[in-house]
Length: 219
Image 1 (cartoon, rainbow, N blue to C red):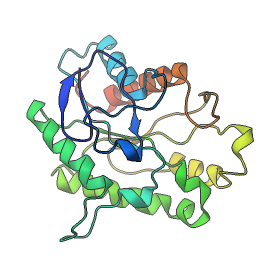
Image 2: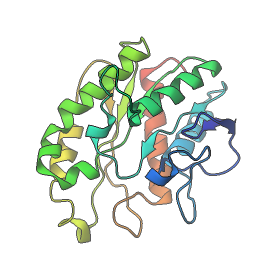
Image 3: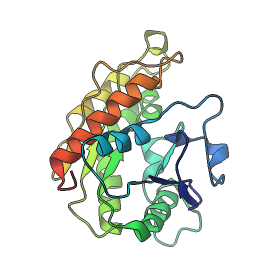
Image 4: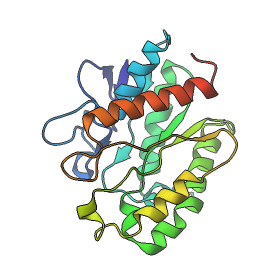
């Protein structure tokens, strides 16, 4: 099992991998969340694939950035002098191709967009733009994409994320070629009421692995 930080540094994983980095960690070659680490969705996904009989090397490319909006994942215009989140992620994905073919994109995002009406209503359109860019840049129009709708929000956060159900519903209804929606029901959040707890990370990893095996010829 291999994983990279956002600065294209690769290593064998023998410890928990954070599924996202903070903005202050964008240049850290081994970014981790502050505090105690739990097994994230990425490692749970990889371990589930192993249990399902996948023997090939598994390479994870964590790209998520805490608190980012779908707007920030739209690629920068041609000739732009700044590198956005999309470009950083694509660079890491390109670096991963030294290990083999890119087999899928796992997409779990949307919390920030649930705080703003316009962003919430634009999520579906912008998501398709982001996925279209990845497929074009990786020269694979049939790249499998697995989308995880937002899970249930802790009741204490309803006022902070008033459009949560709007984003959630839009994600659950996404459809298209080589695009699968993975069940996020009955998953539990941790103490913050926003991010999944460790057991739910494990469950979601297994659900993603099952969907991946069903839609690809890897397993």
